[in-house]
Image 1 (cartoon, helix red, strand yellow):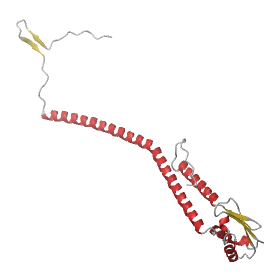
Image 2 (cartoon, helix red, strand yellow):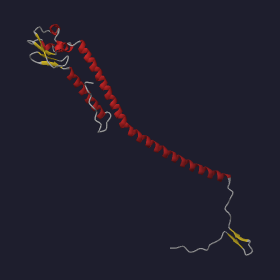
Image 3 (tube, one colour):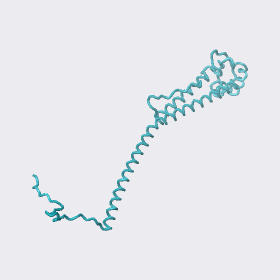
Image 4 (tube, one colour):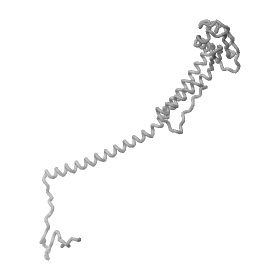
Amino acid sequence: MTSAPQKFAFDTEFGSDGAVVFASPRPKRLFPAEEVEAVRAAAYAEGERAAMASVAAQQAEALAEIAATCRSALPALAAVAHNHREGSAALALACARSIADAALDRFPDAPLQAALVALGREIETAPRLVIHAALELHDGLTSALAESAQAVGYAGPIQVREAHGRPRGAFTLDFGDGAAAYDPDAAAARVAEALTAALAAEGLHAEPLPLDQAPPKVDPDV
């Protein structure tokens, strides 16, 4: 339905002589101080609410950007920390290998004598001891081993035979019912493998790395 048409009314009407014959009441121009203060306070509160909402939105946006930046940086930081651990482990392993080499140069028969002490109960009833060692261990080895063997209760013969192609300090000790062997290169390789496995496990569980970044193996000959 449409509303009934209404006659247009002018705010001000003039007569034929130009005089004002009708004038609509003018809106009030003066307001009491209390009303002005109430309007001012309402406008101020509305502006304050709008400003606080804008500030809160900006803060939320800034916090979201900071969180996104931190999330994107964490994988890189984890990779840096993992690489630092690998480098530190490789350096420690290289230092240990250098110290071990120097110790073998100074005391080449120390690993063999330590083996005799550790195997004291196994070798005390052996008919004989057969030792295969590198050539540099031969000089004075028999007399030194005899003293160590007697100290653990073995009084039988000791035969020292040359083993070609073995690294410095390597030996095989055959005591009839069993044997013991030591190879410094193989021992260093086992330590390096264990260290690599430990670093890989830490990288997978403590600080996950990207799937395309596998931890490199530690070189035992560094």
